[in-house]
Length: 554
Image (cartoon, rainbow, N blue to C red; front, side):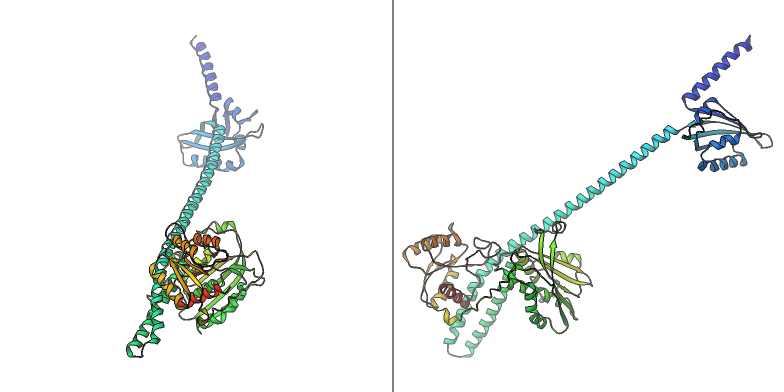
């Protein structure tokens, strides 16, 4: 009775074991090493897709994927050779029934006899295909996610770099604008002072010939000449400051840069000296540009002198012209606003010592110089920068230590192609500047007004004066005025341009001459407005006399 009751229990356990194997996709494996027979549980056969199995070890090995078979065979041989009790392996099989590729994980135990011979291998095999596929999907998703993160990180880094670059360009532009405003204001006040000083020195000079010759008079003459030379040097400095701050009146005209460069080469060669070889590479079919020829010549001269100073032992200076197009990518990377489009490029290159990046960054700053004390004002490049920017152009420095420097000036291509040279007529001789017309001088600075009155009175003109626009209009109402000579910046709510407009409305045909210490005002917008005549401060006796006479004679 006991044996009978044990059979159902055993069958029940076997059924339970089969269900567990099926649920866990686990198969049981028994291999008799000595005779090579293999016993596989029904679940094992199902997992492998074996509809028929001959019970041979070699038949089981054939189910293993060919790329894994040799590895598993060597593993089993090593386990038995080293008499290891347990071993695990992961491999792929190809199901004989449908050719499906599956992943298996085997865990086995080996039994040995007293002589150490392997008798049987017992084990279980788990189908890990789903887990592998899930892991592969997770890995693929992770890789995709990592790629997305990397791409986004690169994009964020690029955005960050672009933002940093934009902030740097903005800071540079703000710095240049702030320095320009400061230097413009300083130059304006300084020019007023220089005009007074120059006027006093010229007055002394005109009185010296009337004095009896003596050693004292000679000393006075020499002192006057030295002081006047100092004033003229100071005037050049303020002119360069105004050029940097883009407050210098320009008189642009359509010109051929090739002709301009060729025309100043003789002067440049003499200026550069015998140790410097000057070469030109002038482009055929060069476009015309619209620029102030005098300022462009000064810019090229400044750059050529800088090139010479960078080559104390001599070298080559090359001036090259070319037609260029500045595209969106380029103009987006510069600090100042530059329009995309066609430009005439003028490059001045040297074979000198070159500059490092930090020096290039500051090269356009006013008063910044790498030259020895007393050998440079630091305003040459500043003047070039201001002139080019005021001309709606662009200037760029390329330099490396030991490789030389190239400065490229880009000026907008002119919409017109005719070469209107419009060479200015020579200034009339001072003897011809004398006149008898009536001139109204409007200037709020008492000393400057007195200086102007002194000059024009000495030249024979009848002069009346006013401190502001309101007084000037009163004078116009009661006097016949031939020419209005007015400062641009006036107190009382009416500037020089507004005064001139009202005066010409009341007196059509009235001649007007403006003067100013700088040009960020009502009569200049980068260049002189049409029909405007202006003399900049400081002006000399001869310059004012000639300008007034030329304007009255028109």
